[in-house]
Length: 133
Image (cartoon, rainbow, N blue to C red; front, top):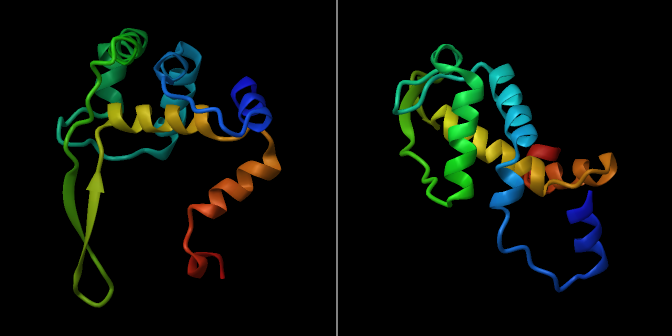
């Protein structure tokens, strides 16, 4: 909420370093829970949610937070799979690693507006006009 208030108050303000906000334990835990609820497939590293929980969720989130704070985090390549379409053709699909999905979700949580009305507009602004029709 503080970031939102500052951005509204000072239109020229730029936020160059968001690692400290994205790497917060509560933000990463919430992002992980959102990604877990989507039940996505593993990325190029082959790691799924069961592997992470067997490794230790707190430990895994702590290592991710440390990589973000040290600014050594680098996203992995995208796994490409092809999904059959109804007409017999194949549609390409890119699958990120769980680690990358958690980081992207954490960034979205930090950067999205806290008010429900403006977050709805933000989500709709990312869609094409044809998707809204």
